[in-house]
Length: 158
Length: 469
Image 1 (cartoon, each protein chain N blue to C red):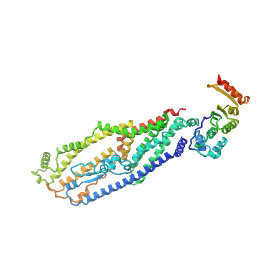
Image 2 (cartoon, chains in turn brown, purple; image 1 turned 60 degrees about the vertical axis):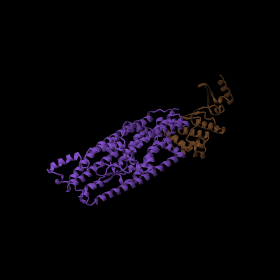
Image 3 (tube, helix red, strand yellow; image 1 turned 45 degrees about the horizontal axis):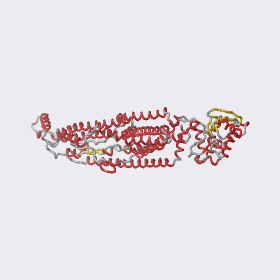
Image 4 (cartoon, each protein chain N blue to C red; image 1 turned 135 degrees about the vertical axis):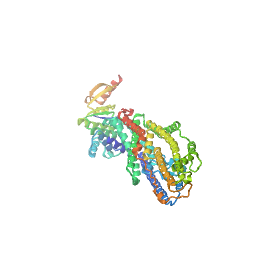
């Protein structure tokens, strides 16, 4: 199982590859540099950024490293906590296609988010939580983003 | 664990401020060690030269009256080794040269502190000062944020997710900084030892290894406490402040406090009172140059009886020599009594000091460092006693020759020949081997061991707040 917090914190003085390498080693995983690069590539981190210090990364780039760490762990379940908050629209879109790709490869993904549009785009199934209780479960394909919003607002009003 | 340590160093390398600090201290340490050794070597050479010169003079004294030779006396030197260059302990205060002569037991002369204001105010910068004060401070600076920064920057979750345990984290962080201390320790001791390779006996190596061991233990205590506080206190600043406070408490405040306390509980006589008391006891005995004392009359009567003669002029021997030896014997008793009491008090002071190691491992470190370097009070007393033992034999040889060498009573112009003087053995002080000295430092070793064990246990079973998510 792997977990991606809202804000992925890495070692700012180390590069993306070095961070990935270190966190893999902590989990007793030893990868060749090429493999590490391919994990980062899969997560869509530009190659020229991979060997630069994480201190200069955007939030989305750090998140990609975070997902690469999860990927490298070969996690079958991935938990994401508000991954889209603070991402620009293109980074957010990249994230959702990356998650879809992972899901297609058989990874179970549970993602908490307030971005209803993104949720509708990414998810297969949607659950609405209110005060810690699951109040509604939906099939993503069965609703439009607008419908989803009104259902959501309806629950929150009560 | 290895990965965390490696990563800790990798992160450290990017911290330019700490790296430059580390470099400065390494250079400082190397320079101090180098000059310390040079200084010690020159002092060793000077002592050797002086020793040879004194012996040379002695062996060329020619025909000379033995009692004049006793006044002429000789000098003896506390040895200089690689270890005295490392930690010169109390040597600057008590000095290292002792004049041995007839009639009196001299105290050490020409201590460096008594001759230079610079010296007495600031002491000399020996590697021990850096190893005891500066490196622990450096380790605190390196380690105070080690765990709290992981927490504050939010990496702790990720670390745990990757399978790192609290215990592993605490131990790895401690070890990574401890090893830096060890490297600096090896650097300093290595320079010391390599530059001084000419006098590396087995005992010196044993002492050096023990010095290494106890500094290593102390650094472990400092690192583990800093890492633990970094994991237990609210933030970086709290950990840094508390460790700095502890450093001041250990290295400066407590030793002063305990020092004042020991002086209060086991007071030493003032120099004046001590000399006066000794003088008084001494005056009750035979004075070698004052022939009218009562004790001398008794001695005379008994000797006349032994030789069955009427007056000292009829004695086949020189009575003056006997009187002087009787005076020496009495003086020795007085010395034993007064210095025995003084040494006993000093030992009590030392013990009280050592006991404070229970709350202050720095004191144990300092005591062990000086003790193992052979520059503490115990070694000084040993030197003083050995020198006095030699002085007694030396003067007795001269007095006996004065008495039985063939001269008559009252003949102060009689001379002994060179052959006799050559037969008087020279004194070569040997520092006792460490096995003999170790019992003196048992308290220090036990407390140091306890502190090490305690700090190890703290990391093993401690559950500091910051390691909770």
